[in-house]
Length: 313
Ligand SMILES: [Zn+2]
Image: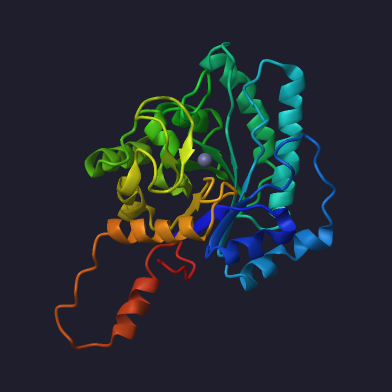
């Protein structure tokens, strides 16, 4: 598992900010999250991103679309701005070689799930065409506030189906949103059942990223209030989410306020690693002393098609 945080600084400074808090993955915005205006990125700054990230020890980069976007909106002005923004976001994300662009479908504002889908599907179809084989579009599960779309695996699966199971469409699961929408991520059996259902309805190969946030509000509250890692109602049981063997190849990104209210800090990443350690099943001790540990490690390293020499710690 790769551990990261949503950091400020944009394309220019995100890698060094993430390195400073001890992360090996990061998430960033490619524009100010408070305004629709999309900046004219310097192509040289975009092009130099992969090398700067590598030098900072960042092994996975996610971009988050701004929260103003609503692809299910019945309002044409908001809808058109949302689509234009996501197109630009995907283009910049491809240019920096990001692994995914995380977005929320948005809210149908009372028009109904089906009406919302009829707006979202053509919007996402045209954006998916701009993705690359390595930069995917990742729909994030919703906490279920108001009329938001994506509050259940069924809703996510319906969206994936309606987009003809597009080869560059993935999912990002947020622990806080799962909890708020009624999925108990603190119960190992329940969480395993959730992943079984995910695999059956969507396919686990589409699960490309995790958001690891604690929750200020109770299970099933449908309220999206992130708490610092281990300091909310999920608490130390975040270890169940982090430790699940089926999630170990994924980047896990924190989106919390941190100790100083300025975003994920060193303490968040440290706590994340501690909880992960508490949650992963202990590796079996070697039965015999014979054979080199190097060979064993080598054998492990070749396991799984997605292990790009990633560290699992
Ligand atoms: Zn999230």
